[in-house]
Image (cartoon, rainbow, N blue to C red; front, top):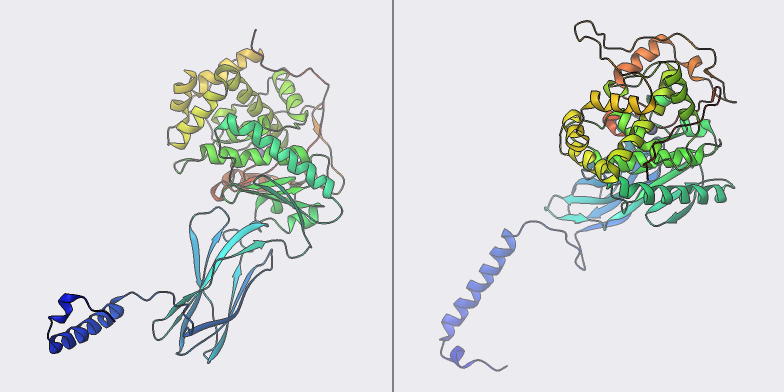
Amino acid sequence: MNQLPWQNMIPTCIKNISSVSILILVFGLLLMLPTTSINAANPPIEVIDFSATSEFPKGIRFKVKATSTSKIESIAVRFKIGLITTGVYEYLSYDPADTVNAELFYSTNTLAGYIPPETIIKYTFEIQDSNQNVYNTEPQELIYEDARFDWDRVSKDEVTVAFHGPIQSRAETILQVIIDTLKNMGPVLGAETSEPIRVTLYNNQKEMLDALPIGSAAVGRELITEGMAFNEEGSLVILVGGSMANGTASHEVTHILNHRAGHSIFRRIPSWLHEGLAEYGNIEPGYSYSYALEFAIAADRLLPHLFMQILPGDPEDIIIFYGQSRSIVEYMIFLEGNAGMRQLLKLHQEGTNMDDALMSVYGMDRLELTNAWRSELGASPYVPPNIAESKPTAVSYPTVEAFTLTPKAGGMTVADSIDNNQSTQLQSTSGSCNTQADNETEIGVISMFLFIAVISTRRFRRKS
Ligand SMILES: [Zn+2]
């Protein structure tokens, strides 16, 4: 081996000392290095087998079989739930042995721990031994599918729809409805549409209720819940049994877009805006809300919806509230277009309060906007009650015979299922059809049918 000229000039003893010094130095550096994953030819830790299994709706079972040249000190799983940015880190339990079988059952059947079906779980296992060796498995993905059924999937762009049973054409229709809604409403809201949307279709109410969060109002109130949106996860659960599935899918996916465009850590999007936009975005809207609005105008039953923090308890008022909400969103877009709505959501997301945000975009606060809208509809102006005399809950209205709810086969009517106690509790905990506002969940259109003398529906049209 050729030596460089200067090396010949170094005395042998010095060369030897240098070699030793270098060896010590290198060894010292190795000791100082932090422990990292060791995936060398003969790793001290060996993972023989591992798995993550969906046991939805109960939870996820994580298993690891591993061995090491020294005692295994800990086995943990690190995972991310759908689009949620914060991760979970949990330890598996096992009996000490040369080869250990470790297991963790991660429960999701609580309101706080709930994970919607079809959510993608990205996970790795981390094994540590008593010699400070750490081994990380390669990242894996689990589809947290409902373990009670065998699923098929159709997907397009970023949207995946899971279904079971012979309903593929139904699933393809829902997929297209969601794609169309994203295309329509993404530009209106300025919302991100390139992030995944995962949808689960259920064929009847029984199988869907068991998939919804335990303790959610949708289950507890025994209403016919047609759909639910999980905004943080970007997931939807839709009931395809009824005729409203397309409208429900469209409405619910708009809630996810509202969230992406306007969610604020300071305050939630008010119900009138969330629901109004969701119905505005609905590509197959029902007529009930239009009729309810016409009825409310005619009967002088309009609600002060921009000032209501929660949904009204009365089921008829709920439908009026939805009708009014859609109408005022139409009016706002009539006034300042999509650009105005995008600006309003952006201001809200930045933490501006609603009156200031409305003033900035429309030059009107909530009261002025309410009365401009009422005037456009030919309704009398809203006069806010004197604060000293006001009560926090809405006044009750006399029942009007022409405006009734009818039961749907297999379900209860809203009026049947809400007693006074429940509606009081609902009022204290919920905001709208978004009964889990804090968890960023939107519970969707309640199945209600209105029969009322048909009056032509009003739309705001620009004069050309
Ligand atoms: Zn809704």
